[in-house]
Length: 214
Ligand SMILES: Nc1ncnc2c1ncn2[C@@H]1O[C@H](COP(=O)(O)OP(=O)(O)OP(=O)(O)O)[C@@H](O)[C@H]1O
Ligand SMILES: [Mg+2]
Image 1 (cartoon, rainbow, N blue to C red):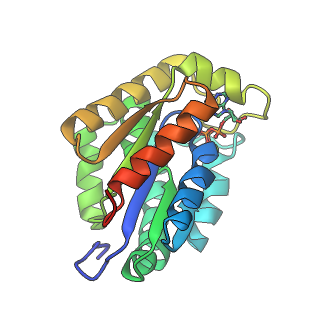
Image 2: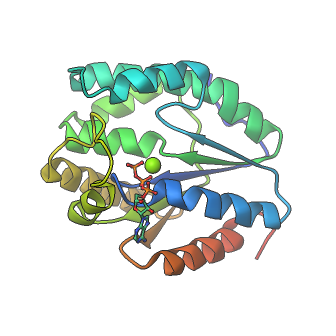
C-alpha cells in the first residue's frame, strides 16, 4: 500500500513539535535552502495534504466538535492514506524533496501522549493501514508548552490548541521517546532559541543531510 518503495528516489522531511514550536515558520526556510541546492521541492502538511485530508482537517480542528481519541485516530489515518497515495508517494517517486508540516510522530505524541492511547495500539493501526512511508529526516522543534502557548496566544485557538499544558508536556515527552528510539532520523532543534539562530541551524543541518551533499 503506502510504501516508500525503491522507486521513491526523493527525500522525505517532516517537521514535528507542539503548538507554537515554529514548524510552519521553518518550512519556507527548508524549502528555500533545498531549492538553492538544486532540488525540486514540494511542501505539504498534516492533518491535510490531500483533498480528503484537507476536508477532514476542518472537522479535526473545529473547536465546536467533541471527538474522542479513537475518532481522532481514524480521521487522521483516513486522511493520511489519501495524502500518502496522492501527494507523498508521487512527489518522492518524482525525486523531489518533500517537506511535510507534521506527520505520524504527531499522532503518537498527541493521541498517544496527550490522549493516553497506548502507543502499541497506534502502531497497530498504522500497520493495519499499511503506512510504510517513513521520513528520511525529521526536525523536532522542541519548545516548552509555556513558550509555545505564548507564541500562539494571539490567534483564535483551534480544537487542539485548547488542550492543557500537561497535554503538551506529555506530547513533548513522546517526541523525545521517538527520537531516542530512532536517533538517525531525528534532528532536535532547540526551538526556544532566537529565530535567526534556528534558521542557520536548519540550513546547515539540511545541507549536511540531503543525499549527495556533504
Ligand atoms: N524562534 C522563535 N522565536 C520567536 N518567535 C517565534 C520563533 N519561531 C516561531 N515564532 C513565532 O511563533 C509563532 C508560532 O510559530 P509557527 O506558526 O511557525 O508554529 P507552529 O509550530 O507551526 O505552530 P502550530 O503547531 O500551531 O501550527 C509565529 O508567530 C512565529 O512567528
Ligand atoms: Mg503550524
